[in-house]
Length: 101
Length: 207
Image (cartoon, rainbow over all chains, first blue to last red; front, top):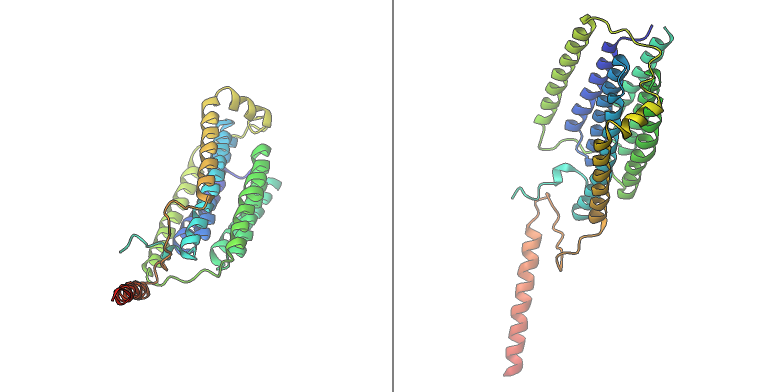
């Protein structure tokens, strides 16, 4: 007997919650980036579970698209983090307040 | 029965690694924990009869993205994450958001559990690599092309970001966010004074 669809959705929801709370708690840009990756993975798990239970391949194709977006996000996001570090010698998002004054 | 046991094993591992990722202050520990989450999710994809997604998960996430992240952490030589200093209300906000999301998860769990059960077709080949490839190049050709264009844009953007911006003749690096603007003012007044003294010297030389 396979676990029901609800268990996969519950696991996905728990992982998404942890990632979402992590984005708010982390002050480090790279930590926030990793929490966003965790949220993307939680959504991927939902897609794959629905794909399995409805016997449709569309969900897995969407997972492929999400992974491509995550790869592009990694390249651009880490480039932005390095550019920010070059300017302010820190990756703390509290220091990214140059527009404040 | 075996698949249920495997699911709970990997689900527990994934949740433990995710909590450890948020808990640890050192970015390297967070990155290693996140790799653990990816591997656990990949095993869950295997039990969901999606071998292509499982392999791609390992290759792209654990192989490419996390190596890039660890490389950046090592390159920047990051310290531990600092606690919140002036944004303490974010703790309350994050806790409240977590409670709301967990409640929603519980609600979805019971709603889906009470819905009519969908029988899984064990012989379905939705996850096989051939069916994914066929769907990718027939029915979903346009989205795949768009993803290709997006990756090209990402390459160009990454090169532009990594180029080292030298658009302005001189970039003054003011220490951002620490609020010690007094030093820069002093420096400016010093330079003004030195220019004045230079003018004085020139005037003296004329005399």
